[in-house]
Image (cartoon, rainbow, N blue to C red; front, side, top):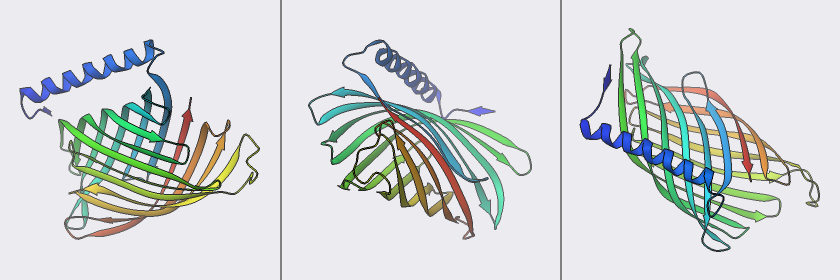
Amino acid sequence: MVVYGNGFNRFKENLFLTSLCAVLATCVVSSEPAVAQEVVAAWEGNSFSGNGVLGTAFQIPMSTTSAIMVRPTASYLYYDVRQLGVVSTHVTAPSVSLGLGYRYSDGRVTFDIGPSVQVLWERRKTVAGFSTEKTHVGAGIASAVSLQFTPLTSVSLLAGYDTANKYFASRAGIKQRVTDFQLQKPWWLLVGAEVIGQGNDEAHQISAGGLTELAFDQGRSALQLRAGYSWFNYPDHSKIERPYVGAGLYHRF
């Protein structure tokens, strides 16, 4: 069963998908002024909670340090809902979104901010086997800042919120280069630590862990592996703790 809030919600979904296809076609066909700048694929989580992302960014330069960023993204969120201390419902929520934002980057500081629109297909399946499906259309806002504190050390902070499923996500991290201290090789290794907060009114998650990053192709590409521990809190006051793992691949053109 697929449930729509109303006919206008379906209209917004179709309008969004049409707009997304139009923007992608424009960016692919036109080499100027929109240039594909970044591609990222990542997954992070465990057996009952996690999120996978596949996204790209197209840059429309405004100056040597400023640009408009167009960000089509597909994601897959899943988590469990608990009642009376036990799992009651499994939730899966694939989505597509289109963001339009501003970026400032001077080589040492990079700052991104911008809104987005999102279509999310939510499926809920109870432990008894009953399932429902809903389509949500909403808006989002996200921002990120990174600082190259020294040639070998960087710190980053990002946060975002989506109204489609009232989900927030935030992350703070630090990375340290541990090879190629003279900055001469086309590849290098970094290690780091991060703290993550995310969730909605059905589950809150706090995570802390470490990461290893292999940067190559003069830093234009990177492979990240991460692992850590998560603490989950639910509205019924139950709490659980579980490890998490993750992997990500990034390429900048």
